[in-house]
Every structure is written in C-alpha cells, then in structure tokens.
Amino acid sequence: MPDIGNPIGFDLATVLTGSGLTLLLSAAILKYGGQLQYSTPKLYGIGGIVLVVVGVLFGLFLVLTGNR
Image (tube, rainbow, N blue to C red):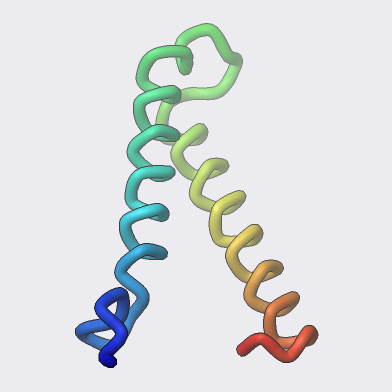
C-alpha cells in the first residue's frame, strides 16, 4: 500500500505542521509585537532562527537515534 503522506518526495504532514506553526508565530508577532522592546522584523528574525535551530537539533536527534 502506498504512503499517502509522502506523495511528492517530502512529508506532507511535516510541511503542513511547519506552515501552521509559522502562521501562528507570525500572528503572535503581529498582535503582541508592539508590547516588546524589539521591532517586528527583529521578532520575525528571532522566530525564524529559533525554528531553524529547533529543526536542526531535532533532525540531529533523529539521525543519532537511528530513525533517519
């Protein structure tokens, strides 16, 4: 039986989850960003860096545990 979650070479569930997380982060920055000392572009940059670091660390964890 074919894997429906991976029809075009990447995991569709992961892409949708990541997109949803990015939209939620963007909405939070737009709504509450004015209450913080950082500007909106800086908050987007910080959020992007955090997501990249978390993704890389999770990927390394999966490789080290033999899951990928």
